[in-house]
Image (cartoon, rainbow, N blue to C red; front, side, top):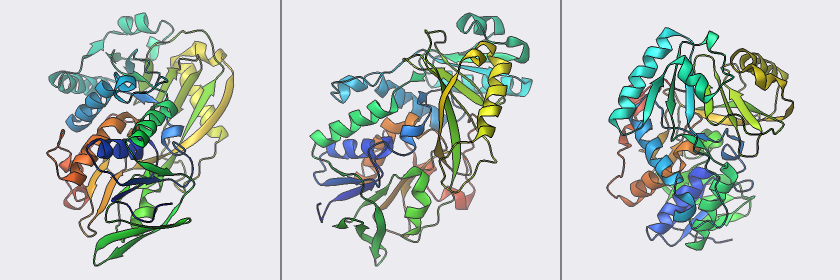
Length: 382
């Protein structure tokens, strides 16, 4: 293992691999990415894999739009010999209250102003897209045909291989045990396999971001909450778009292989970094799906798993550098949408590290916003 690097990125999920690729593409020659497990072993590999532009804040809309535009050409841009499997058949957002319907209309006005082709649908139009949708329990819907679904493992693999071709070195099953700081400056990373001298460390560990930040004496206002997912047996294609409801608290997508993948949030989920599964989740998930998409209840559940949502107070990510520790950067706190933002996370973080003019100004997503109270609340999260 190398004992010196210009940049050390900790975390080899979509964010870490994308940051490494973008830095290398800009000419940084000495980059190391370490992960305590394998590539895509954390939150990225456990996510629901949907990507959407239908957000309620301008910042999220911009980041998501740029990311999806990248994903549309990811195979060519990253020169990937396989396929990231981008199924671009839209997101159908359904509302069960008038209040949520009003929020949809506000969101769409914002989205359309930014060039996102979302639109309101009547319940009849929604059923034309998903015929077995139970509209009796709904008030209305929104749809964007350019939203979709990707394979998170292959997408991360594409970034990983592209970064390696550019000279980035990856060390898997290598755990960061300490980040060394002298005179308020990063000087290196201690791992279970040796010491790496460096002046720049990027925290891209998502679910474990607080523990890593604690190593340099930086208190970040995040917590990691278990979120569970289940998958059914595969069947013939019967649902194109992701169906999602913020009020009813669910999302469900049929994968290209035919299985249905679905999840929901629960504020009572444990926050102790466990990624086990529970019967309670499966039961509540089934009740919700039976109410909104009854035929799906006839399918057999094959398995379920869990991952970590690294949550911030405003459900927006933290991009930036630590004020009290020179050379320590943060790309964390995605609150469940890190995979969606992966391509642009790499762009904005590489620009920040190199002092370049930003493609998208994400300065308002810095850590200091939690002290000043300038939160940017995102209303559209499951």
